[in-house]
Image 1 (cartoon, helix red, strand yellow):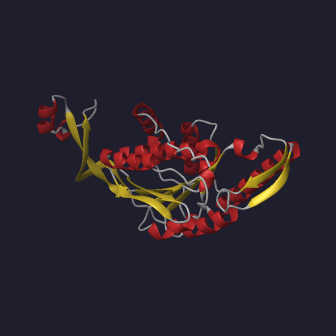
Image 2 (cartoon, one colour; image 1 turned 90 degrees about the horizontal axis):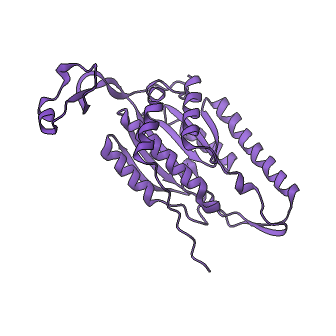
Length: 299
């Protein structure tokens, strides 16, 4: 038996991350859709007295905020930034089940790039960010932290992860017990087990201030490339189903996939959750930006 090919996702470049962070900054500062009755607590750079971090001087910065010692050491103007009165915690949930490894791991690679970019953008604004990778259990965890060093930790974890090619089911609910305190939660998954996922989303929304649902779709996974009798395998459960592969079967698979997404969309709408069905053939920047704009409009 051939050894399964390792799936290593390429993270966005520093230039891509910086451009994306700049594009979504205002969307991540503003209040986003949150669970009814929840109260957001935020922390970001702004007007305050507690030291937050430092950056290069920019025209318009107050001279009194210049850090003269760092300016002399680095030989360029450096200013201190201070905490605003609010704080924001975020936890990203990344589906690491076997279905994410299908078709060369295209969905997994897309999810990793999106998770890395969102983490980077949030950390740039001073938010605390954590990451959970889940299958039938929590497979890896990066506790919440802030700053450039914490992005390096998240990036290292993302680079080291890969979904099992078979046998790892998606059970989002296992993440609930790891969510503590007021936080926004952003879930990246293909949500193929839609009924179970809706149940698990209900459990998660009781433990966070805002819940974002990003469904990753890959059109290639619902198209059978061969004609005739085939034996379909559920990579998560191991169940097999013989069927006749033809154009009609492809149409049926497409309709069933659309129906699953429609059920998930209705559930999210009725529960006040921000939902996006993202086709991974589209740029990840576009998918994230559209979701954040949609989430903001639901406030």
